[in-house]
Amino acid sequence: MANKKLDIIPLYDWGMFTEPRPSVVAGPCSAESEEQVMETARGLKELGINVYRAGIWKPRTHPGSFEGAGSPGLKWLQKAKKEYGLKIATEVASEKHVFECLKFGVDLVWLGARTTANPFLVQEIADALKDTDIPVLVKNPVNPDLDLWIGALERLNRAGIKKLGVIHRGFSTFEKIQYRNDPQWQVAIELRSRHPELPFFVDPSHMAGCKDFIQEISQRSLDLGFEGLMIESHCNPSVALSDAKQQLTPAELSDLLYKQIKVRDADSDAKEWKENIDQLRAKIDIIDENILYTLGSRMKISRQIGEYKKNNNIAILQTSRWDAVLAKVVAKGKEYGLPENFITDVFNAIHEASVEAQNEIISGKSSK
Image 1 (cartoon, rainbow, N blue to C red):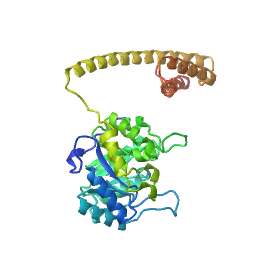
Image 2: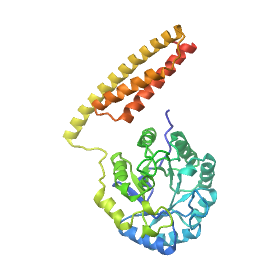
Image 3: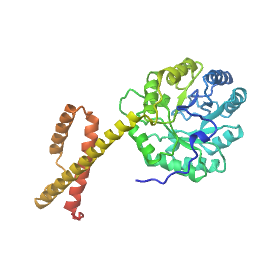
Image 4: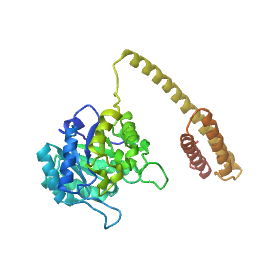
């Protein structure tokens, strides 16, 4: 599905981020006290961090846990802004939050995953931000619903928000994985493909859920060419009131940014690079054309099978047959060094298309 290009002001024209990548937003998960906010701000300023984040209102799953300092915390951020020259940022989830942020001079706001999933709240926030010049970042919804994510961006853009970007923080999952949230990078890549004009941040802290995986997730996001990172940093994570395991000290953040990760260039003017990449891409184009021809040939045979099933009153789905086919191609794929999940996804998609084509034939809807 093609999407209309959003009317976006480029990231480096926002007045708070500068090249080269990555653009970084950093600070504690929650503003817990004036002392904690100021000490962390001082440490981050020394690293060259310019945009300081802290949660003011925390949408917690269960009542009774720390739900943020509320509006008093904005005074602490305001003080950090004045004393250290930082741009300040926080999450908003309602019209009231927006008005409070505007009152205290917040420079950037973002919508959390749960808010993005609620079009009513997104519209309320968009209306409250109308006629302001404040940048807005939109986290992906809790579940991998790309249209819901894009819809939130469209609502904000229609309200006149042009300093607009996204934050990929992964998706909730019931499966046991090493991360807190499932990255599902393919969703982020699809959004980038549909809207290359959008500034793209990744939140490795929420994706990882602990410090151990922040480096690899940050590097993956840079390898994909995304512009920024939103990373949680606390002056003393061991005593943090929320998400203690995923927060870095300013010193640890310094190591990550200046020693552990590497920014990839978007392109190169080197003659050798240009010649080799053009040759390799030409080979890919030929292979892609062959794949399409093969898929077309396979679909033609699937339709013929559909005709035989129709003429012999046979059900479309042959589960045991498909299980055998899938097991065979997965085994063969391993011989070619192809991951099982990749083979399964590709061939299940082919199977679904074949079933649909046969269903059209049996139901009499097919024109072929």
